[in-house]
Image (cartoon, rainbow, N blue to C red; front, side, top):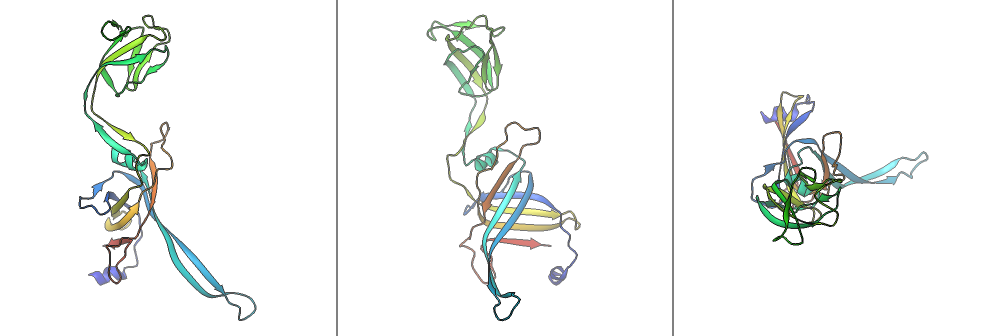
Length: 254
């Protein structure tokens, strides 16, 4: 019965579970965002005190407390396209597989030809003043095909500095994220928690409206697993009305 749940004293807490998000005000279904290593709500309050001046010795005559801020903080383990785009305030675009013909470059031995697309396959490199008269260059002893482009060997036999090169290749589908191209998103979060310290009992927390700021660090080379540390402010949701109804978040416990 609900009254028994309300009176329950023994409730140690060690929560795991799924976190879901959707744009604030959207009718779409909340979507899981992946493995979240840490999730917390952090409250800040303004405390004003009035001194007790009626007698020697000091003390507090009155106190007023008001919450000034609630932050939601997350450590995201899955650097998927959606999480990464939100974490760098970026826009994401899906690039379909295709072919590129005679992409123009100028040779610098020991340097990289950064191609327009990543992960090239079926690569053909030609050398010449123009693409129509250029002749193929063999890969052996001249260049290596890498996911980021074509690396020209420092001692390439068939290529010299400043040679005009023409690269044709195929590429697979991929996602491109342009960072710092949008404002911080406003999201609605749902946490479906399970309490490992209390027989797996559920605890669901719904955060009605929250901003999500840019990640503090985007680790690109790291001996440990990568993660995104992001935080945002829990904002007032004006659509939540009624006596005793929170405009910020709700926790439901079984």
